[in-house]
Amino acid sequence: MTSGTIEHSRIGSVRSTATGSLRVHVVQGEQFVSEDPEAVLTTLLGSCVAACMRDPVAGIGGMNHFLLPGGRTQSADTQAQRHGVHAMELLVNALLSRGARRDRLEAKLFGGARLIDGLTDVGRQNAEFALRFLADEGIRHVGGSLLGEHGRKVQFWPVSGRARQSLMERENIQVFDAERRTRPIPPVESDGSVELF
Image (cartoon, rainbow, N blue to C red; front, side, top):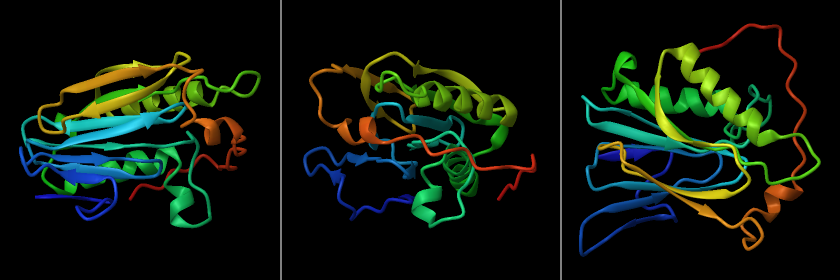
């Protein structure tokens, strides 16, 4: 059984008739969890970060993809899902609700590239946020690839924990044009309190 924010029928998920394997592409603001041993989750990352997280004992894992490191916004859910705190909490809670245990969770982090010269290094902020989140939550960081100047194509097998990364040439890809034009959103003012759900 596979579920998450993304459903089988969504555009971007394909089940091979030859092998029976499920391939799901996770885009900004989405997360997906599966216990299907044939599933592979994919994403394309620039300054965004994807957390590939799993419980190796329960045999379940998932991936998220977030654009900004800061807290939640007061706007629509699709905007809030772009933020790291929300994205990480959604992924952890989806895993826990499906039988994972927090003390067994492990994560690989990918992304955080600097694709926009001369502006705030949002990629570094995303990477630092993701590392800090794992440390604060007691989730083991077991690998991945952060920072640099290249976009990445990432594949993650959520049950086995296997991950594969391919670096993308910065000059030859148009997939990150929208990200290059995006200006970082100012951080949300906070009184230091944290709301967990």
